Image 1 (cartoon, rainbow, N blue to C red):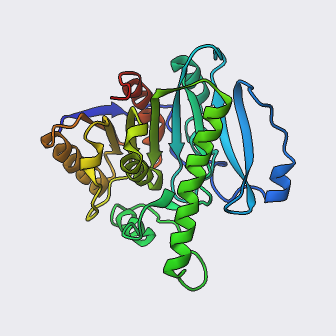
Image 2: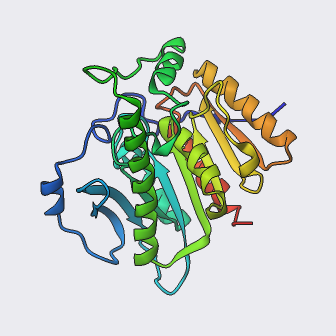
Length: 292
């Protein structure tokens, strides 16, 4: 059986809905007029013109205050959950800037094109399946989008743009800062956790480690064979009964394959409150690994 690393919930966790971090970003024309400074350190709202989408796209960037352009710096890429935006992790983890400074990571949170783009994951990962799991665990699922269900071609297009936005942002950060390509990490929560699995296996050679948070679902092929050389930290809240059960099974399967896999469970953690106490463990896990 997978070893459970029980982490107390702690007082720093966000237990209610955050005031910011969810919803669509500002319009493209307004976003394009927002100031940004190349090479800056600290907390930054950034944007770029996403040609394939024909619009300006935001991303949140935090560069540690001790950044030295002459020293290669590890990069953490963070994927938000369903309904979230580039501010998601900063909203649910108030101490995130301090953690980033302490560990010395560059931290970037792409928009992923939309609040529900799924980061390129195939149509076999539908939003309604996540809603079913949330309802079964007593959580309030996000409402289905208004109007008729989108057609398959439209969903595929949105997901392709979501994946491309993430990869574009990584390229932008690498071009501007001295990123250590052997210590580039991927994390994500909920929909972003599934995105971490999907982009993790698709671009496996890029990552030193990945960390899906509350993103393990049933009845899906995660292509684990492609992740054999990528250490993985899987986490969930203890109140997420189905998610935590599937996460344990996932970690056990990885270990049987000879993979480096750990499981962290937040005692009393809900789908959202598990995020803040998991991030410190995630950063510690990342610091232990370099690309193989």
